[in-house]
Each structure stands twice: as structure tokens, then as C-alpha cells.
Length: 412
Image (tube, rainbow, N blue to C red; front, side, top):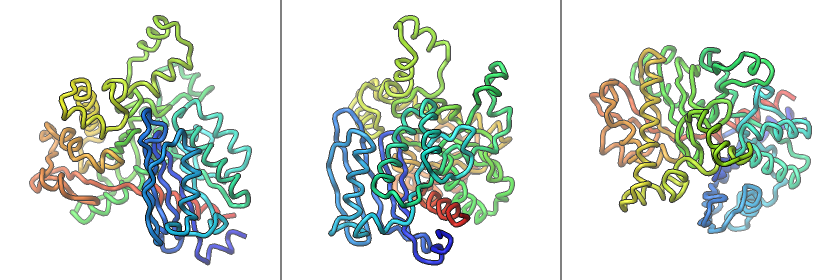
């Protein structure tokens, strides 16, 4: 039945949850026109300040509202989509399908998946691997099922794009049985975002005369959750996040790379149980833990500018970790053609981009200060004489999710 509908105009609702944000778009599947879109920010942030910016072809609305969790945020999204002044639809019945970003698919989900109760149960089981995201994803899916019981729900997994990583890059140096018995390995995340911006960058590189079949690109998705990917010829060869999203870069509330023995030490000193250690790793650390100010980079940058020493340290640590990964991935790929900045911080903080690129001239990286401050993506913000291109590319995970949603359902 859905295949028969594919010749007509479909309205695909795409939900993209971050650890403290929720992006949504209502997309025309044929033209890829965005009929309505919005961003809910500071979900679950201590002190509130929640805000939803909503836009549609019919109007726009800014809503200041505290949101305790993603399920509460979704209720406001439904209200805005059907609002008589700023909504793009009269009722949720006009929505043809919903594409849900789900962070962790483990080894079970390696392709877009039509969600039924069995799939939802498996996604819930994977929450231990992505405690900040999968629970929110499940709440969003259940809210949509409750509101639209006959509308197809499709899960698109962040882990899928990283399936090309070689075994020596995804294996951990643990007893091999932990991989075979429990699936302990590097999976990687933000796959939909990395996939989208890499394709955009390849177009820019091709226009610059670079052979994209062998191009070496580092994608930096920097937001409340942050990750990097090393990509050769469009195929991921390494990525910073691991079995869970906690590994790699410093993030809003996550530790990033950490000596594992520290966790053993803390467990003994604090007499902590696993759930308490998990809470430290995923909810108390990162920018929030170091700065003592906030998990939001905007708050941290403001505090650092005002002379807050710990906020300045958090900012330095965040940028240093990215620089270190750029050096490591350049070595892993045997060279570098381009670096991409994307994500909420990567796209909007010229200060972070400048800090990251400072001192990387030996790799051929140099940015144009004026371009970095003034240009919006997609744009080349590198210095004209630099041998490595630095691209600012706004991500569009929603468009990728909508495409994959329609492609899956058209097969049924």
C-alpha cells in the first residue's frame, strides 16, 4: 500500500534527538521542501531556560517553555505543527510516516528498520549503551505511536554509517571472547550527520580538483554530543566514539577519553555501584563537570570571557582534544585534504573553530579569520594559501533520515 502512495506527495516527520535538544522537520518527500521545522533546546538543563524556535511555510513562533524531558518536548512539537497560525498541517493525520533518529543499534540494527513492538523492545535494551539518547528516542517513538497508531514509524541508526571501519580500528585490546560473546567493539555514532556533510564536502572538493575517490577528510560533529570521523574516499576508517557515545571528545556532560582504571578507583573510593559510575561518566562530566557552569558551550564561552578560570579550562580542554584527534587521523589516513566543522558548536562558534585550527599549520591547515567570523555554510573558510581545505558545512540529518525512511517503506 505504501509503495502505491510513493507517486504522490508525502509528508515525512523527522525527529532527531540530541542529549539536550530535539530537532524536527516536516518534509515533502518529492521536492524535499521543508514544510515546517524547529529546534527545542536546553531540554532537561538545570535552571531551565528551555526554548523552541518553530518555523513553517505558514508562519513562525518562538516558545519559551521548560521541558523536563524529550517526551514533554514532543507534546509541544505536535501542538506547534498543528497550530492554526504557524502550523503546516491541520492534524497529525496528514503525516505519512515518521523517521526517528536512534543513536545505538548495536550489532542487531545495521539498516533502517520499521518499528514494531519487538524492535522497540530491542532498542530499549540498547539503552545501556546510549543512556542519554536511546531512552529519549524510545519516548519519542512511543509518543508518535500513541498519537498516530496507523502511521509507519522508521528507526534510522547512527551506528550504520561506520560499518566500514576495519577490525583493527574497531576492536578493543580486551579478551577476544568479549567481542564474540557480548559485541564489545567500537561502533561510532552521529553517522547520519557525518554521512551528509561528507557528501557535501566531496562536492566542494571535486570542484576544487581533488579526486574524491581517494580524498582524506576529517569530519568534526561538535555539539552537546561530539564526535569525529576519518573518511577515505567516502568510507569511514575510524571514529572517536566507541561502544557507547561516551568515548572520544569532551562533550556537554560526557567524559570522552578516560583511563579506565579511574573508574575502578572511583568505584572503590566512593563505594559506588555501576549506575552511579555511569551517571558520573554520562551526566556529571564534560563541559559541565570541568567548568561547574553549564553543559552548554554558549554558557561556558561567556563565563570564560568573563574570567571564569574553570570555564576557560573546559574550553581549552574541549579544543585540545579535537586538535589531537585531527593529528592522529591525519596520520592514520596518510595525509589530509579537508576538515569539516558541523553540529551546533561546529557551525556556530567561530571561536572554537579558530582555537581548534590554531597551531595546525604544519598539517597545511590555516583558516581565514574574516571568513571564519562572517561566512555561513556550506563555505570554505580556509586561507587561500592553505593546502588543506577547512569547510563549514551545516548538517542536515533530517533530510537524510527522510530519504532513508521513504526508501525503506517503498520496498514494502
